[in-house]
Length: 355
Image 1 (cartoon, rainbow, N blue to C red):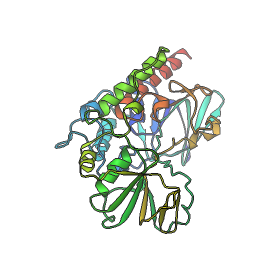
Image 2 (image 1 turned 30 degrees about the horizontal axis):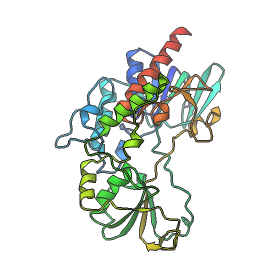
Image 3 (image 1 turned 90 degrees about the vertical axis):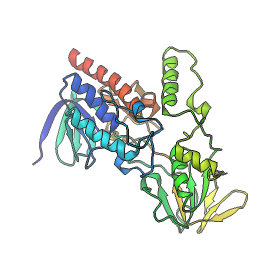
Image 4 (image 1 turned 120 degrees about the horizontal axis):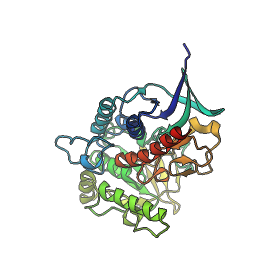
């Protein structure tokens, strides 16, 4: 039976950003719900490739209120450990998560926002959107993608190296996902790494702890109207986790420049050089999942919603968490999600008490 529910705050997404918001909403004794499209806890972490490792030790990858326990035998926790932690976290704080509930539309309804799902309808005074990017993989519009007869996968499709043994694989992308996945594939397959620009490895002693400190310092300087310290981009792009270090040392992380187009049997560069391959793995990033907010008419030409802090400039009843640095420094990381959620919830709760 279709039911209409009314709450003060509706959080869309039960991953790390949504749970962090829930923690602060619970502390504020707010009337709220978390609507999560997943079949189980953990956000997108249960869907990541098996060998993924965080960039920081467990003690520096926490959500507010509870340090992540260490994973036995690993300094840098696995995706499976993070998924477990998020499930335990929502249970620990008795967060009101409802799943699987996919929010299809958010639209204005007088002085509230109406959320339409595949089942019930929710009416909220404020909405915190925390749907992340995982459901919106990006593949560049390279000529020939429709004529290539081999396999084409994206980061979202990769789980383990099984099935790649002896195959010719081209890994596209210059970020951490590409480097980590290439590291494991290079042990079983004939791999070629292709990047739009020369990959830059961070110093071996720099991990997520330093990256978050840099991002935070840059944001604070910007808030003060001052020039910030050297940014993350000035240091490099790829964190040298143990698997990447090992692959680099055996010479498996040598990158070729980006090809010009795909052929029926492989890839081709502008100078006429060609190479046949069996699989192209696109590690080319993601876009924010904002389709549910389309009825509000807020998305700009970059595919983002302009914000002040985490609040939409044009719709002050909407906050966005965890989509990247444009919604807060390092907000797509575990520790960064907690800090931006704290500020967003404080603003929402303050507005609720005023009105």
